[in-house]
Amino acid sequence: MQAIDLDLETLAEPIQDTLRVCALHAFAYCPRLFYLEEVEELYTQDAAVFAGRRLHEEIDKQEDKEWLDLYLEDEILGLRGRVDALRTRDGETIPYEHKRGRCYRDENKQAQAWDSDKLQILAYCCLLEAALDITVREGRIRYHADNVLVRIPLDDAGRKWVKDAIQQARELRQSPYRPAVTNNEHLCSRCSLSSVCLPEEARLAHNKEWHPVRLFPQDDERDAIHILEPGTRVGRTGEQLKISRRNEAEEKISIGQVSQVVLHSFSQISTQAVHFLAYKDIGIHFVSGGGRYIGSVDTRQGSIQRRIRQYQALSQSDFGLELAQKLVSCRGEGQRKFLMRGKQKLKLDATELEKAIARMKAVLKQVARVKSLDSLLGIEGNLAALYFGALPQVLNPDIPDALRFNGRNRRPPKDRFNALLSFGYSLLIKDVMNAILTVGLEPVLGFYHQPRTQAPPLALDLMEIFRVPLVDKLLYI
Image 1 (cartoon, rainbow, N blue to C red):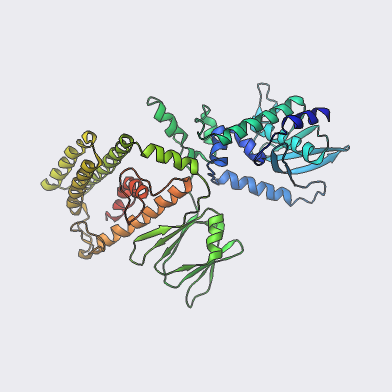
Image 2: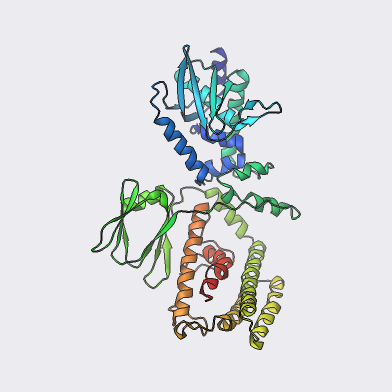
């Protein structure tokens, strides 16, 4: 106990709050992951996270009375956490941690704990000693994928490791700067926040010669629930959403199947459902009866560090202009290639279409030479006029006359094709807003579109990239 008392004395400085043991695990795994979760308050839940939860639920159902979980907190040590399970053997209290993956194998093929897992179980050992005033000699980690139990002894070196990690994590939590991307790319492939951290993009930005291993997040198989009928009400019952329509039976949907709730026209949602969806980080969006995007519920609780950097970056006019140039080039090239594919698919011999494609190519060369956003807006307008002027020529000639397109118009759209375009763009900007809020950016601060009474500028900026592949191509009948 003497060694423990000495450690507690060295840790007995004033602290603001305790650190979660799982946050210490994240710190050992990757300091950038720790910063994103603890400072910027960004969290995502992938399949591995849910699988881990199911494992712990199965363990909780075991009838072995020697097993129990225990929540502990010690302000002097500066830690808090819930131990997966405790077991008593020969008068010794042993904490257990359960991992669904595989253990680490050394050069002799001996089972070892991963460093982040080892620090986590040692932190639980120290927390037990500090909070319960007992001596803990070891912790154990069960790796369920290969059914291996690894014993981790707690000694003075282990206590010092925990103490140093706590101090370093506290210092990082106070820093205004996010740590650099880890050099170990394999860590990124297993990280639930890779789709928010964007490690390959960060590495590529610093090394143009680097060849990234693209990390595409897994498809979200949950459903976006669209409530279309006026008067329909969305409520909550237990862990389900309850949808009540006029003169119809109630429909119940498990919250685990829902990625977004989109309320059209004058459909309604209860306060309980709003709180429930916000707690589950599920987007809530509103679209008018005419198909115009109205707004989204902003459930961000933190991420101020990310928004501060967004303000700093976009306040630099040269940087904002560079991003805007890339945006206009991306959209213009997408529109031009769409016209070229349409011409090739329909085997058209249209001189006017070829002229429009050639003129778009010439106009796109001017983008890199502009010196102001106003000039760039003029170029974008020219590209849009050429694109929508040529678009009717690449539409399938067999489509009904009612769906013919004779030029872009909106607010309100004057024909069915334009109505479909506008509705598609509304759904697109809804998804872009959902992504912006998920990663914690500020949607009202864009780099190209300026603030006005419509959708937030950043959402308008980012949706430009996806207009052609996600909306325009769908109407190419």
